[in-house]
Image 1 (tube, rainbow, N blue to C red):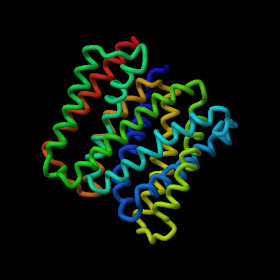
Image 2: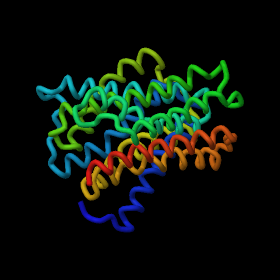
Image 3: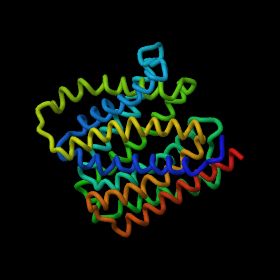
Image 4: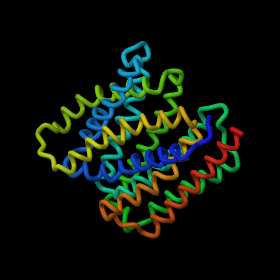
Length: 295
């Protein structure tokens, strides 16, 4: 891969900002929409830029090919389930907490990779990183100002959502030889198909009179935080590789906390800051171990 230039770092920062901005926008979307509707609108609007790119680049979409069951399964685990769980949880939890909780994905993926892959085993540095990162999450749950008996379950559901991303990532290895755009477009199609009957029977969003800010947020979540962000991720992966792109993990919880304060004036406690630092340090150690393995 080429040596990263200023533009590459700017694009990486932009990707982190887009993904981090999803959390406060999910909070705003919950003012008018239920979690199933938010999940549906995210995948529906998110599919538009991805499918348009595939059309103009003449990339074949294989959503209904012989591998359709993999696309359907990954669409459910990697999109439907986490989008629903995060939206459900954020309704009762500050969005900055969701950003920190979701940033545990690199730590969870390291744990899962140890058991389900042959060459991603724990070593000393990874173990230290995992312990530090998850200690920060445990410490965050002790913040009685922000997490109490009324929203404790909601916070756990957000963590479960991050785990779904990890499991979906492992399943994606089954179809890793296919083009990224094809895989993303196919799983978005299946996620939309899965959510249509669910949103129709459970929430009937056509009966709503949503607020303007909620409508703008949910469209943004689909088009930008889901669709455009994935396309931007593709560009960074192709030009700079996975190790460079994975650095976005450090920035998302930091930007998520800052943006939630700017737009929603959410409380930032001492325990939130300590947890944020612990998670970022944990991710640093895990990524450092991965980097050393590649050189």
